[in-house]
Image (cartoon, rainbow, N blue to C red; front, top):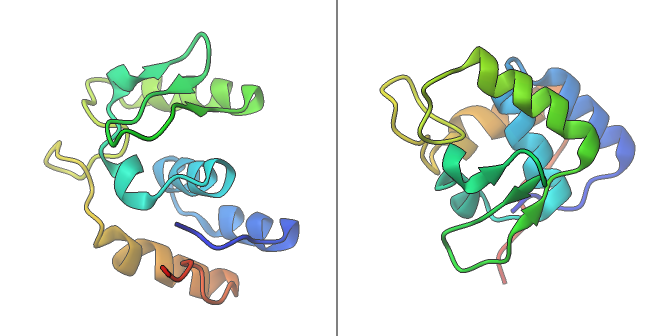
Length: 121
């Protein structure tokens, strides 16, 4: 889970994202409070683009995606047809939790956002 960020930190982090997929994943993590591991399991079929609801398999409640993000999400899925998972690696499998070390933490460093991951208690 990402720690609570101020609006300025959110803006820097989203601006530093190098792809639509990374920007959308960061946005979902920031706005939904969903754990990264839960989001990695999300499939395209778990998403209702009409209502903006994303069902999670982990037993967590569904996530409401903000209406202003839906057009960007629709375009993302249109530009990336045939996906099974919302966030896939090159081989069609979901990205792994290692993503936080390989993508998220360097991205946060470039954006000047420190201690991006909330500490588990």
